[in-house]
Image (tube, rainbow, N blue to C red; front, side, top):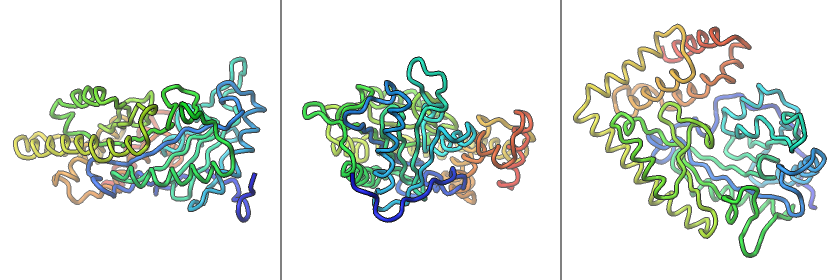
Amino acid sequence: MPSPAGPTPPDGPVPTGFTAEWLRGEGADADVVISSRVRLARNLADEPFPGRASAAQKKKVLGLCRPAVLDIPGHTMVWIDLHDTSPFERTLLMERHLISKQHAKGKAKAGESTPEGSPRAVAVAADERFSVMVNEEDHLRLQAIRSGLALRQAWEDADAADDAIESHVELAFSPRFGYVTACPTNVGTGLRMSVMMHLPALRLMGDIEKVKRAAADMNLAVRGFYGEHSDASGDFYQLSNQATLGKSERIILRELQDEIIPRVIEFERAARKTLADKRRTLIEDQVYRALGLLTHARMISTEDAMQGLSMVRLGSTAGVLPQLDRALIGQLMLMVQPGHLQRLVGQAEQERRMVARATLLRQRLA
């Protein structure tokens, strides 16, 4: 196996700033599309999947993957051994969309009693545009993320990283089926393309269920703020492809980037225009109620904060609150999450966290 070029970057701390790529509020169609993400599932040849591997076998996979991941060109990667981090630090990574809920919790082999200590890691680029989960459901989950509608750029980044990793390690590949993955739904390309979309007007118009049904008819998955097995929070939804077998990467990319997602964007913008033209009082009422809550509440839950920020973000894009910067709203969406809030104010019981969250919002939105 080739050695990494130059000195191996040291293990680094969990990122905690507010410069994550998906927070910037920039890029194409950023009024509706928060971020675009491409994820590739890959496994090492001749190694058992993480769900069937022993702790020793998982450690071996970490040793094989680490030099390959840290040698990806164009990225300065920081390696974090999740089994050596606290639950709090793993929560921070999950809230930043750098690891999944499953990876944060750990998943032990049947008969093992310490899932949190299950050997696993994540490597994160300094700008958080790229990350790699190691020993999640698959040995490798490569993730490229960009602000706005930019699936093509994210795909190019992930594809280049995939080639670089494959030059170091042999990946499990079937000439008949394609890349072999732990879950049958990922077999083939191992590709998941998704966009996080802000769809408040469709909800206010009562059309969000129609979008969900249409997405299902087009073989798309509609998930919540944190992806699979999560609920929608603040009118933020993730739309992603479900079929990976029988379609090439470029066909999936073309369908999502050029055909399907632009239609959903059009539906949301049309709903916003209808609200602005015919139900202006309704949209202003919703936006100003939310702003009043965020700037005057003395206690507020995460869910209420996210819903309020959703409406304020709608106001900033619909011309009701043009002075509010989308990047600030994006930062607040992260800062009000339980892990990041506790990093700011320290460990506290729920009532004190609700008070601290309300104080934070009043100060930042004053």
